[in-house]
Length: 95
Image 1 (cartoon, rainbow, N blue to C red):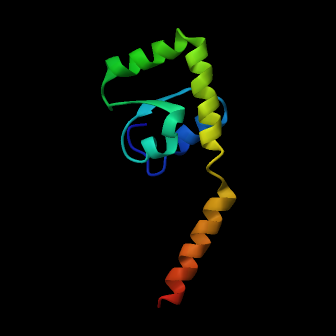
Image 2 (cartoon, helix red, strand yellow):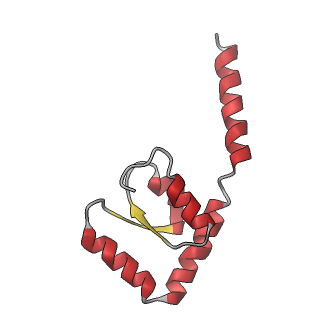
């Protein structure tokens, strides 16, 4: 993805143990954290080099996968719902 409102595809990939190479724009860097390799959008050479670096280095790929899994565990639907509820309650009480 080049543009993400949240970065759900990146999060889903990390949660399923898929190594991530993604664009360094919008919400993607915040979601990926250290669990993905980030490149400039449109820089096809950098994207190719990142993919090939992971393909050619199983230890690096496995390290990135493990970091991605840990990063994905920081995002839970229940926590998101709780935060949204708190935000809505605050907005309602401010009226």
